[in-house]
Length: 81
Image 1 (cartoon, rainbow, N blue to C red):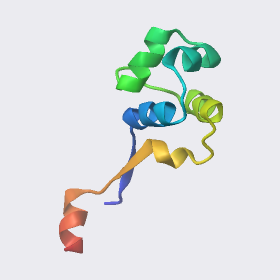
Image 2 (cartoon, one colour; image 1 turned 135 degrees about the vertical axis):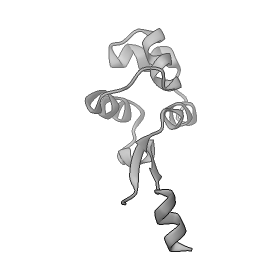
Image 3 (cartoon, one colour; image 1 turned 30 degrees about the horizontal axis):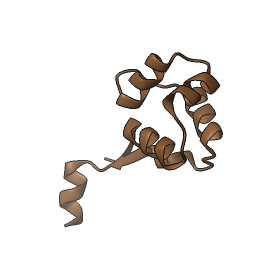
Image 4 (cartoon, rainbow, N blue to C red; image 1 turned 135 degrees about the horizontal axis):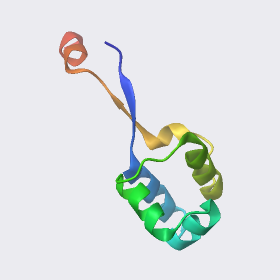
């Protein structure tokens, strides 16, 4: 099996904080409520690709791969050892 990419909402929070943005600012710029934005950051609500691209643009990220974690199947890990 191949490795899969999984969205990591905690990376959104880390990147937002590192770039000095408040949740209120991001929510307003994305056109969502602060509550909805917080749920996205916590991984309680999914985010679509368009909204993720908008978020990345707002904070100045050009490589959206940073928001994903690569998961390798256990079988594949064992074969590599």
